[in-house]
Length: 224
Length: 224
DNA sequence: CCGAGCTTGTGCACGCGTTCTCAAAGTGTG
DNA sequence: CACACTTTGAGAACGCGTGCACAAGCTCGG
Image 1 (spheres, rainbow over the protein chains, first blue to last red):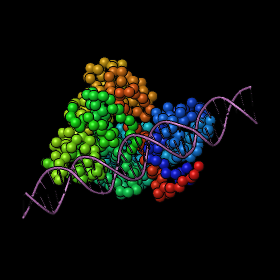
Image 2 (tube, each protein chain N blue to C red):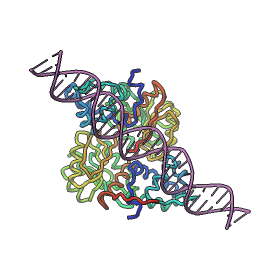
Image 3 (cartoon, rainbow over the protein chains, first blue to last red):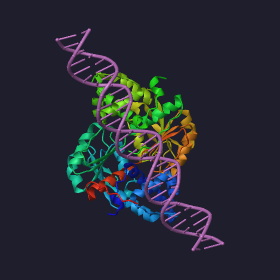
Image 4 (cartoon, each protein chain N blue to C red):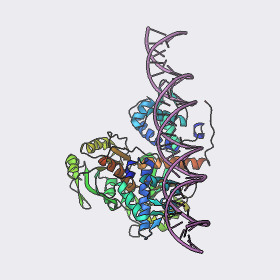
C-alpha cells in the first residue's frame, strides 16, 4: 500500500487508466524505455496535461526532463487497476451477445477469465460454448460461490435483468457489467456499469440529425 | 425548426433522453395519460430535478400541477433523437461480436436497421447472417453509398479499426459506434462513440480491488 | 370565485473535471 | 560549472453538470 494508493483517484481518471495501460503495452513491445506525457497522450487520444494530472494521482512516477519509465508505469497502472490479479468472471444470459462475450478473446488476455456461463433456458443448459458448459440459473448461487466470482456480466433480456442482478449480489458478486437494456439497481457497496447499445445508437442519431439539418455538434467520449 | 431545437442541449442530457424514452415506452403500454417528473425519474433511475431540467431543454412540455403528457413527450423525445426516421446501419467486422450485433433484435425496433454486413475475410464474404449476405470490404464504399448509410458500427480487430474508420468516413458515414479496442480518430464533423468491453471490466476491477483490500479509501493528502 | 394542493420550470450554489500556465527539476554540452 | 533545453507536477481559473429550493402556474373541490 503506497502513498499513491491512499489518494482518492477521480472517476474520470480511473476510466482513462486502461487507455494508458493499453497504449503503454503497445509501446512496450517496441522496446521504448521512456515516454513523455505528450507522446502517451497522443497514443491514448487525450491531451498531455490530462495525462500528467492523471498520472500524478498515482504518485510521482515521472522524471522531469525525461518522461515516464514505460515498464515501471505499466507496473504501477496494472497494480492500481488490479490487473496483476486474476479475476474469474461469470456471464449470465447466453443469447447472441452472451455467446459473443464468452468467445471474446480480449478479456482473458488482461486477467479476466470467463469461468462460468449461466442461462435460464433448459434447452441451453449443458451445451458447450468453447470449453465451458452452460449452467442452469437454478445453480447460480452455488456455482458463483464455488468459483469465487466477484465480477458478473449480465447479458439477459431486460425483463430478467433486475432479478438476475439480485441473485448475483446475493451470491457474493460485487461488480456487475450490465448489457441488458433496463434500469437496474444494486445495493450500496456493489459497482455496476452499464453498456447499452441501443442508447449509444440513439445518441449518435441525435447528433446525426443535428448535422443533417443545421450546424455541427460533435459529441465526445464519455467518462462514466 | 421549433424553439426547442434552437437551444443547445447538454451532452449529459442527450445521453439521458434515451432512458426517458424507454421508460415512457414502458408506461405507454399501460395506458397512463400523464406522468410526473418524480415517477419518470424513478423509472429512468435518475433524480427528479434532473428529469425536469433535462426536459426543459426540449421546451416546456409539462403542465404544472399535472405532469407530462406521456404520448406528447414520447413524440417530442423521439423527434429530438431522430427516432422518427429510419437509420440504415452497416456493421464492419463480422466476428463474434459483429455477428451478435447483426442478430441483435434491440436495434431494429427503434429505427436502426442493419442493412449491410462487411468483412475483410474472403471466406466469410457471401455467407449469410440472418437475411443479409456479408459483403467484401473492397466494396465498402460502393455498398455504403448505395444504401445511404450514415451510421457505421465498427467491430473489427484493433489493428484494422483506424483504416476501416477512414474508409467509412470517406464513403460518407458521419457517425461511428466503435467496439474495437483501439484509439481511433475521425475528422471534425464526424461523431464517434466508443464501447470498450475490456476497459469497462478494468474499471470494475479497480473498484473491486479497493473494496477487497480496505473499506472506504482513506482521504489523506500530502502537501508538495 | 377562492383557496388548498400539486407539480413544473429555473435561479443559484457547489463540486468535479479540464486546461492553461509556469516554477521546479532533470539532462546534456562545451 | 554554467547554461540551454526538456519535461514533469501542481496551482489557479474556468466551464459544465448536479441538486436544492422556491416561485409560478395548473387543477379541483366547495
